[in-house]
Amino acid sequence: MVIEDVFAVVAEGTRREILGSLRAGDKAVGELVDELEVSQPTVSKHLKVLRVAGLVSMRAQGQRRYYSLNPAPLREIELWLGSFDLPAKTPPEPELAAVAPRPSTVLATAVDPATDLAGQQAFGRTVGRAAERAADLFAQLPKLRRRRD
Image 1 (tube, one colour):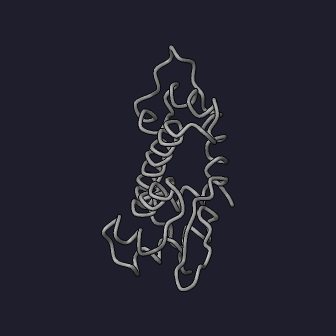
Image 2 (cartoon, rainbow, N blue to C red):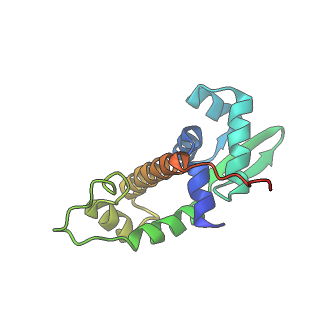
Image 3 (cartoon, rainbow, N blue to C red):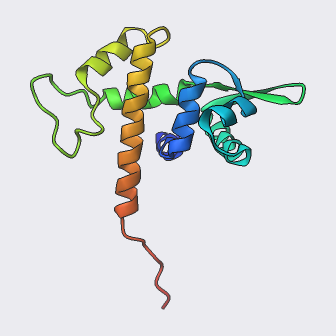
C-alpha cells in the first residue's frame, strides 16, 4: 500500500470515524451503523474501501461480518511523519501547524504504540488533520485536461 493511497482513504471523515470506532476492538457492521448513525449501505461502502486499502480486515461468523483494525498501513504513515520531526524550539510554519506532529505526540507514540492508547489516539488525530489538509490542497489544484489538437 502506497502512503498516498492511505492518505486518500483516511481523508474521508466517515472512514476516520470507522477506524476510530474499531480501535476498541472488532465490531459487526450493525454495531458500526448504530454507533455512527449512518445507513448500512454507507458503512458497507466505506468498509470495502478500508478493506481494499488494507486498513481493516473482515471475518465472517454466521451471517454477521466482523471488522477489525489493521494498523500496519498507519504505522507507515507514522514513520513518514516522524521524518519531519522539528527541533522543539523551532515553531512550525503556519501552513504546517495543522499537520505537524507535536513533540508530545511523537514521544507518546515512540514509547510503545502497541500499548499506548493515548499515543494512538493522538496519532490518529494527527493523521486525520494531515489527511484533511492534503484533501484541501488536492481540491485546490487546477484540473488538468488533455487538449485536443
